[in-house]
Image 1 (tube, rainbow, N blue to C red):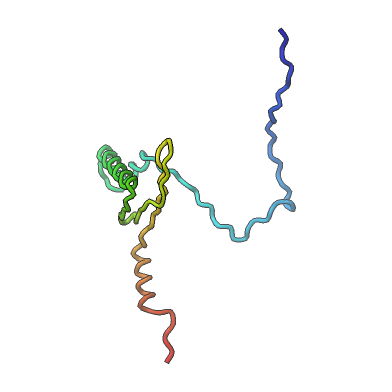
Image 2 (image 1 turned 45 degrees about the horizontal axis):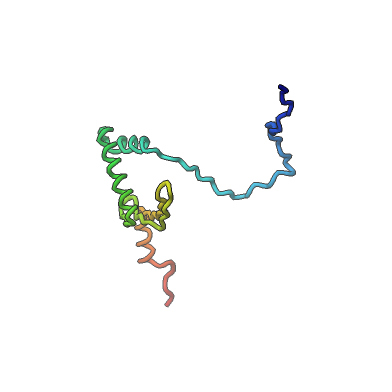
Length: 132
């Protein structure tokens, strides 16, 4: 038998070279901050509820599972949920897939109490006084 003498054609990792400053693209003068997305797992969510409520962890875990199940069932039926202080949750679109159902939900957050007061003040007091 003869051994294969073919060499690997896989690309070798090359460390990136720094780009000279004159060739680097200019940074935007007022770049918006990049939002970091944090994924909260059920375990972490239960821990947060335990800290906020002071209840025992097993009780909070059972209640959290029950609340999440009810939320899931209501959204699957297409119901609109009004849950202050969370807000109003409605299903904008649903797509049936082989692995499950994809629900595109719309969440409208309720205004904070101080924001609502500002809106009331601006409605009663116009920006400018009426001229005579």
